[in-house]
Structures are given as structure tokens and as C-alpha cells.
Length: 111
Image (cartoon, rainbow, N blue to C red; front, side):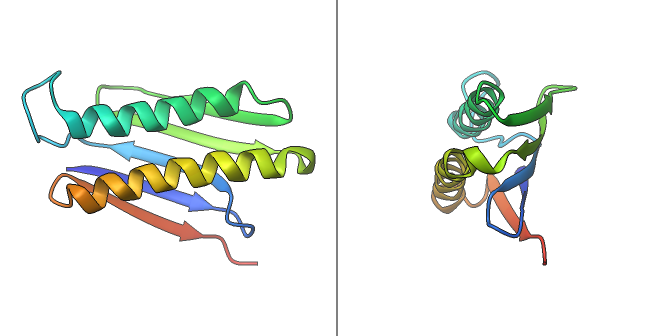
């Protein structure tokens, strides 16, 4: 089971994301669920890290683990919000289609 824990700031924009585990929906290196989650999360991190005004810290210490933390300047808020929405829509879609292999939990910071 892949567990995705997302923390959004008070504006609903990505603050951090932790992806841990393996879907076990197919053979190693052929698992469509793992591949989809990996591509979405890695692309979001790479895109954010190339966005001016964003500090994106990420690490993948082992297979089946990816962690990211995001800080952004107000000037790029809309761009980071768009990337957040894209990432969440993709992850939620995967978890709805493959609930036995992927769980997404979203928390919002309180004001």
C-alpha cells in the first residue's frame, strides 16, 4: 500500500508531501500504481524546484519513499496553487481507482 500524506497551508496550497510504500499491484518495475504515483510526485517536485520564488526541498532516501517540503513567495502563489491542484487531482484519482493500493490523506493547517 502506498500512503500519501499531504499537508496544505491555510490557503490550500502544498506545504509538504510524504509518499511511502509500494502498491504491490504488479511485479516490481511493472507496477502501474507505483509508476503513476512516482511520476506525479516527482514531476510536481521537479516543477516546483524550477519555479522562481519557490523553495522546494525533496529527498528519496530509499525505494518507495519520497518527501518534499515547499515554501513560496506571494508572487508565485497562483502557480504553486495550480501545481498543487494538479498533483492532488492525480493522486486522488489513483486512490479512487485503486483504493486497495493507494491511500491519500490531506490535512490543512489551521489559521
